[in-house]
Image (cartoon, rainbow, N blue to C red; front, side):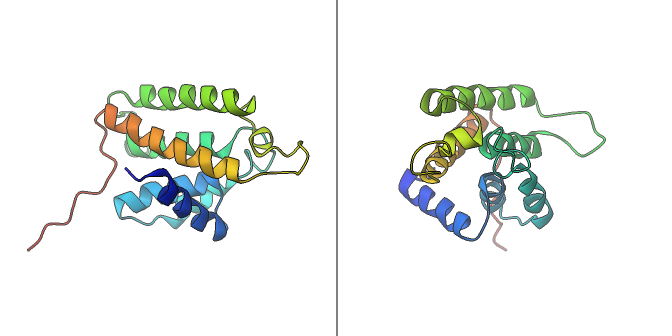
Length: 156
């Protein structure tokens, strides 16, 4: 797992390219898998700045649910999921609710950013929470023995 500072710097670099929190999570998991999926990343823009830019539920929370679903659910139309799939998402949601509410009083994007506070929004809150969330997400997957990284390429 990445230490926090390099992880936060990687997240900041993605923010600087114009990606929001939900998209950053997708880019991180795709990077670990050695894949690209611009359609997935673009679709997650609908979660930016709290579901449709409403300031409501944080894109880290909703984006993580999407990333976890991407990893644990089977092909479209196939109702089978990996064992423990629902539990994985539930564990992340419970953790996020507790962590965010404890630190910022809610799971709303506007509250986490501090848009209502003097000095306006502070995106460093997002970067730190996103780094913590990424580490937690990988920890939950590991705890449930759910593979998330690409298998190393075989040498010929």
